[in-house]
Amino acid sequence: MNNIAVSTRVRFARNLKRYPFVGCMNLSQREELISLVKTALEKAAPGVFEYYPMNELSDIKAAMLVEEKLISHELDKDSGFVAISHDRTSSIMLGEEDHLRICNILPGLALGETLSSADKIDDILDQRLDYAFDENLGFLTNCPTNLGTGMRASVILHLPALEKAEFIPVITGSIGKLGLTVRGSYGEGTKVSGALYSISNQVTLGISEIESVSKLDTVVNQIMEREESARERMRKNDRYEDEIFRNYGIMRYARVMPLDEFMELSSWLRLGAPIMGISERDIDRLTVMASPAHLCGDTILSPEEINKKRADVVREFLGKGKI
Amino acid sequence: MICENCKQNIATTHYKQIINGKAGSYYLCGECAENMGISSIAEGLGFGMGDFFAKMFDTSAPPIAKIQKQCGKCKYTLDHIKDQGRMGCDECYSCFEYELKPYIKKMHGSVKHTGKIPKTASEEIRKSRKISELQEKLDHCVSQQDFETAAKLRDEIKELQSDE
Image 1 (cartoon, rainbow over the protein chains, first blue to last red):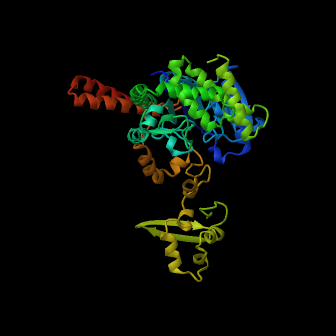
Image 2: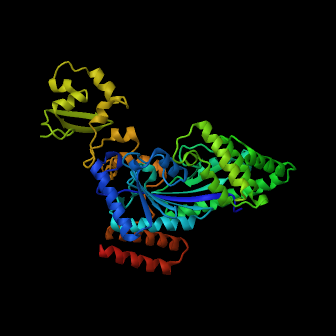
Image 3: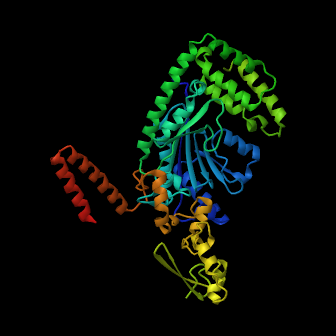
């Protein structure tokens, strides 16, 4: 079942008592906040983070960070700031919806480990910054949907078999009652592609971080079990392997590949990974490499050029025996 | 007296309203009163009762919303919060506690935080959390008829409470 969970992410929303929330902050307060957080991080964990003021990043570089899921689309392009750990598992966004968004991401299903990593960074900052907190409402956040723990834990699952069996609406309906939600893999408001679904907690008040994460873990495991049995049924179909290798063939030889097509084909590649002895982490890497901003790099390419380059990158990646 | 809305000019208008049996009284300057569509009261001229009540009972009407209180820290009113779905600052939660509580309860099913407490939180908050945890354990023990442990927990709670 290991190849069903793609990645785990935990984020904390935090605000400082001394400033109004992001929408009401002036420029000097924003600069002060950046300097406070930077100093706190450097004192507690010197050399662990790289710092990027958003106004110094080109649009393409910023989009690359979004594709790596290290920042969100909502991070302010002018006054936003992000600290990213060298191993690219932690990022701290300043000037997104809240003063601080502490995010940790790890491959596969690793809720306990991801929570504990995010918790450590939260503790470091907590010791040096005065968080806005209320005994009853918990951590005070810009949007009341994040009150309480301010924590959103999510697991990205690859669910092609359940999607094919049209079982996703059933999951969405039933986990909604448990305070959990299903979204696209880039979070709120993003569309689903490549059968990648993000399962996360919706409720943050009246439930502790541990309770929330263990509830998510239980539900994610149940969904994974159902996906596994649906895959088992798929495997019994004579055409299953044929479909996997046909789609692999297209990836291996195509000259033009739009993103939607890549996502659909890479979903087959993930599904066939155990048969082909391909590592899921390599597929994760390929998915990032085949994203529009990563394909552009330092040059601006037209959509047609991007689609051609994507096909080149995929061909090269699969052809060189890297996977 | 200073205008309760802009908190800058001298109040020249005393405005009273009763909604659902709840009386409200506001001191406003001429400019704010005019902006809220109640300048006619200030001037005592041409005031149309029909217009006044239409605005008052229209839930989207600005006059009622505009004379709502303002957050002392960020100056947000309930209107700002309704428009943006976001607070202006941490103090908005205490300023608009009465108005926000039902929505928060509906959203989360609870208005009691049970998760992590920041290290900077006061000793009082920590103690109160400890007491509610012990109380929960005590309730559980009573339901299980484990009165011996329940008595110990009760003493512990009493001790913590007597420290306050």
